[in-house]
Amino acid sequence: MNRALSILSVASLLGVAVGCRPGKVSGFDSPQPAARIDAILDAARSGDPSAIPDLIVMLDSDDPLTRLLAIQTLEDMTGQTLGYEQSASEFERSEAVGRWVRWYEAENAA
Image 1 (tube, rainbow, N blue to C red):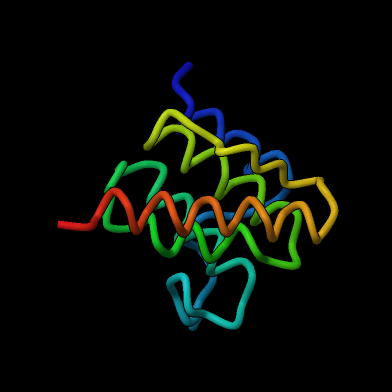
Image 2: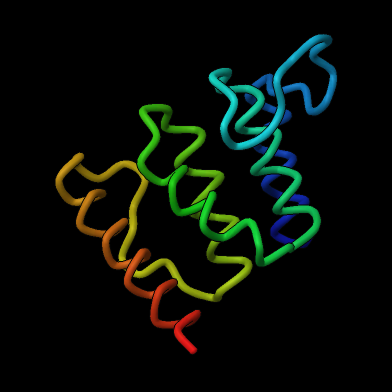
């Protein structure tokens, strides 16, 4: 089973019904956690690297499931976690998000 399917399976087990919320505001910028999770799952399915900046932002979420899915998707896309652990303290997560931001900036400097 590939990682994107396992991410979808975890979301399914936790009761996240992908794409079936009528009237929802979709995307990473939605105020609704479920819509943000849908955006992460879409990124996991597509493997679209343009979602990486939004996934990095999702690492700072208050929602543990959002953080878990974001780091798993980033790891699938990049092959690394940069030491980020979704269950770490807020300080440790913040430090790791900083590493992700610096990594992304370095990867996209041209």
